[in-house]
Image (cartoon, rainbow, N blue to C red; front, top):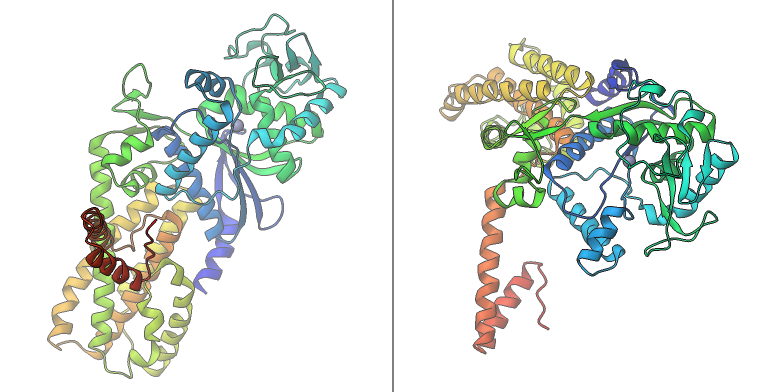
Length: 525
Ligand SMILES: [Zn+2]
């Protein structure tokens, strides 16, 4: 029931802040429980920085939450693999643009994996969608929204009267365009759909050799996978104008349908020690640099401790606080699992063991959330068996906290508030465990109290598992054990290399065979 009720509540209650209308709106999907989500991906000419980390962690949790409450989400994030920045960097490094782009694309994906950003379904590349880009440009010209000039094809903003609606600007008072005014443009605010060039790299097209404009890549990709209209478009706040504005103009001009996107979501800026992050200030931090000294999950928790729309201030102090909070969560879960096992060990069979298939209870992993359903049913049965009334306060308390947690998540994905609920709850959990454990260990506990303890442990674990499914912070991982065994394995492999250098093959083969026996494959070249 727990899961089903949540689903219904979620589908009904979720509110999302829509940049287009500058207010929170009830979320209504276009196609029942299917959602199409697009987020602007990276231009792959350099390593991703912590500001990128902020945006992609935020949308990762947004996708995870939407799925948790019952939606099926198709999440697309484009890879801009052709762009002036890429071309310039490739020339500097004396390599071709595609080699450079693939190199940084791979590094970007490695960074995302480390941050547990694993919910993107597809990373379509601009260079794989040139046909779709050409088709859109063609339609825009035919419909009179775009014109060809000497150096390119441009979108004529005056032909699209609502240009400026996302950034809330009037057409005659637009912010200066970041693209340098081209002499062949009719209006400085017109933006490039195709940039003509005979300088490599270029792609052939009916408009001449050239490269695609940045904005058209997104709409060409989303039209191919989502169609003319879709549910959510996300990105950093700095992309609202002109990038997202231009996307709207292109797509709505092509489709004659409005709106192109129902909900526009934008993540706030990330500052470093109160200042804007920039290379010139020397406070520019890549994800790779950060992860040399910090656990990626500490950074993830740090990001989720601020609402995605608010500015976030990166500092060592804030990371330290997140480290403490992460430890607190892990310790609580360890305590809880030990406590649950302890209760089971001290319980008369007919109270707990009979009603708890041990193998499912023992499997304390986020994947086992559904297994808990059967345990919950068993508990209901045993409630009927034990007709005595129990003091259910602590259990009701958990229900209340759960409601509060999801109320905040439904309020425009308010992760800092939800986190506060969970972190405060850890105090109660540890307090309850500390109070009951001595009684359990000395046998001075009644069957009723034992039973409540058991139900408390299961209910709480279930809550933490739901939390972990959404926040994905590896809090169920016994990190130290993994860390130690990896370190030992490294030492063993290094020792073995030394033995082989010394031609002590008998001993090195012995180590290889023993490691292979553990199911890990070591082969010599
Ligand atoms: Zn984009």
